[in-house]
Figure 1 (tube, helix red, strand yellow):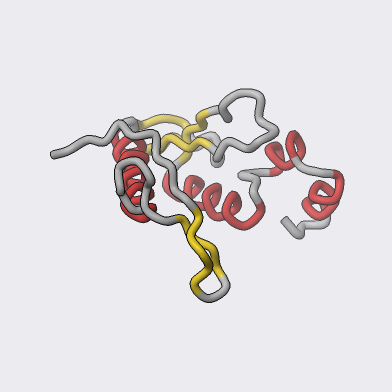
Figure 2: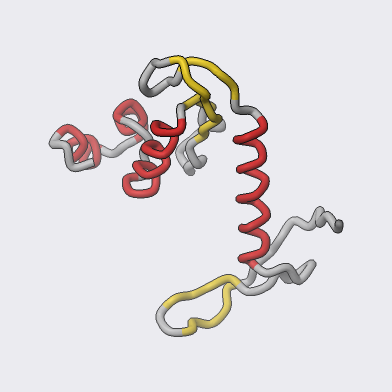
Length: 125
């Protein structure tokens, strides 16, 4: 097994069709997809390795809970907090984060713009 300690640099390649895409790392040659796959594998190993029986922050029931941390955004002064969610609420939080950028109403209230908050209050988010 080979472990890369490279601080990857992925130059943007000319468009193929309508999308720009990162090329291979200019330092070690790894592809963008390979690096993303490895990062996903590590995140999954951390999530499964730290799972335990506890109270879900979403539904407040005692269940097997998994680590969830929202993606860090430019406006975050510190790393987003780790919350512990059951499988169902973990999936809901991930889906909401992918579609809206926020994991719940509190996250929207703390970090959203006025327009995003108004949309959330109307139920659009």
